[in-house]
Length: 376
Image (cartoon, helix red, strand yellow):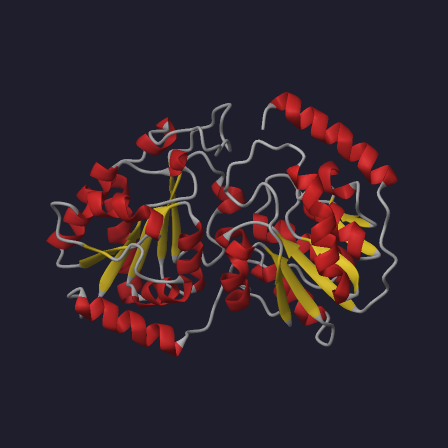
């Protein structure tokens, strides 16, 4: 969206917040709204756990995109899950600027039978979710971001540059109180799934992996966060020289990327061969997981596996691994530029801050973490 389009939208939101009808429902259901994808659903887990801890007997309903229903079911302690096609998060191109507003009415109709009294919006800038919440619940709790807070009855004051998990927890704590989580005392975690574990064991054996292995997950939701394929091959060669098996994972859409990376090196690609539960169990069985900043790397953290995250244009202080920093390492060039945080689809791979991360730095961190994990 262009700057002019943003300005027009924001001006329209001011008007909408003043004239849009508000729900009067006083039901006891709480809607927990998070429109984003895998990584943000996982980073919202501490907030949802805090909500459940403070309100053990209240009916919690997750309102997420269809793309996140499986991981929300695995990671969040809620009673039910309802999906909404949140505009701007479908990753499907649209040229119709009126589409988000036309979808509001149908989405509100689908949520009305839940008889919600409160809607909590966990993404700070999710104005569409906040607007939808105001149409179906009498109270709406958001961050203090003006795009969302215009529709709120209560808003949480957030701290600049604070981790996304803590920001979501602050929004919850604004209403229910409670002690804010930390990555050491309340790390991400998802219990094992036996059926998925059995399936991935068979998959690994069929691929010739019958001993310890390291996972490399090279893909990401934004091309600008990718690390050069040739450098991944250098890392694979270094691991194989130490006698370590390497499994490369990815989505079905990342098959070509993973096939190119494993071409000519001794590694196995399982891209596109698992669902989210299967990927979780592959991560859980690994000695170590390495990858660019992505949702699946947060999944590895939730699996309890030591991780190494390569960060470039996204901020590791806000989106880094939520877990013990001894077990979860960040490699970043530390560069700052005017386009930091710009993950728009038009930005290609080859960002300078990713190119500044050397294979030698990654291999040294692997050696350090494997040594620590082996003796820990």
